[in-house]
Length: 192
Image (cartoon, rainbow, N blue to C red; front, side, top):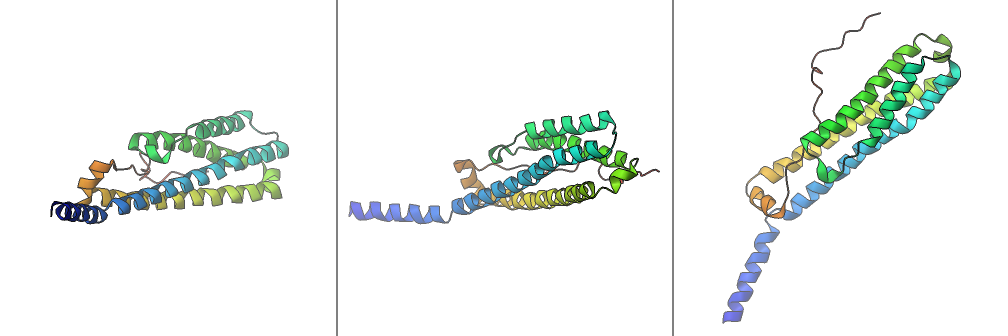
């Protein structure tokens, strides 16, 4: 009789754990990690295109050295900031995003400076690289949006009752989102 009672208790515990949401939380955690890997992939694509863009610009124009150096330095800094999917705290995401924003700013200055060199704008290689960079920036935006959606879904699951009880037991913690930069709500001023 005692064995039957122990088997019954064991059976009830196993059934209660199967509906505790653990597997759902693991699945959503994996989705967040995949989304983060896609974000990193998009940023890596941009970092890989930059040397080609810089070399094309160097070869086609007697270009401003300071602008090129700032792009090269910003790329080095952006690729040195590594963030794993296990460490997606808001502070670490902010540090990662700051390095990426610095690179984006340097690229913007590079593209604006190119306007002074009409022979470069007509260069087919440059035009192709510029189109690739624009496409990459769009990919980054899309992947960041998908990442934020995956994080929202994960955080909702982890914080919802009764999953929040099991999340604490199994160490599932809330993950950080990508945030807009301060002042991003104001449209930039374009002057010619």
